[in-house]
Image (tube, rainbow, N blue to C red; front, side):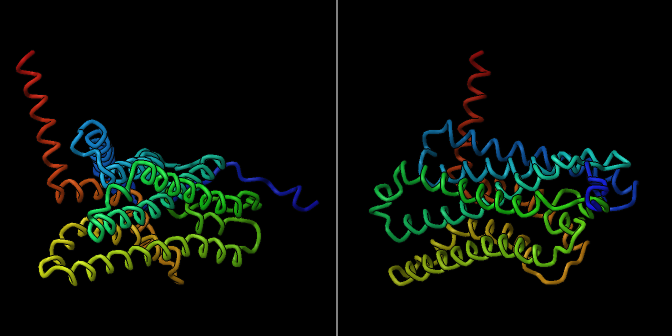
Length: 312
């Protein structure tokens, strides 16, 4: 009877990145530009790989999927963040909050598994070059991408299932700019300490296991190549540097947020901005700046546009 008399929360209020209205107004333009660069950069990589025959290989197929996932991940949180800079009351409906949680974990979980698939692709290319195209055939690539989406979806649904039926009847202020599970469950009208441990363990196990697999994969690549070639280690390191950089930038904040026992709000907000806003922008930049074939594809695209304009 007591629970029936409790009011049900229909919306949550974001506290945002900061309390200063002046600072929020100042941040509007930088974050808007960052998001536009993220959209353009990732969609450019996807379109280049789809349209340029020189990039029709397993590595670039996986890279196109990574860019698409980054575009989706950034689009879940950044548009809402930028529009909220103009609002006094930063609200989101209960359904919108649950949708944010679901989508963030689908795309973030899928990206973790996709990065492992990309490491496997580099392992086959560097350690078994003669069998590369027979091992990394079209069916295998599609299967790896499907597995990443399936694991991301199952992970997200397991997270959502644990919080969807929680009683939210009182506090509704989320001290962040999007609905992140560790912060949302604190608002439930019950003791969620044990549930919080389970949820963090779920995300922590996925992130840590993928990160360990990636470390093992890239270490094995470098060690194997060094044993077979004097200059092999430096060449392999040059090939894998972009992948390793993306791995560290993406997994570092995620592991820290979900496994670090102490929660510091300002640090958590910075890390959340990093893996939802900054990393999706850095990924296409890193691959574009360090990849000669991508840069050549951009040059070919520019030249085609110039020729088309001249002919017109």
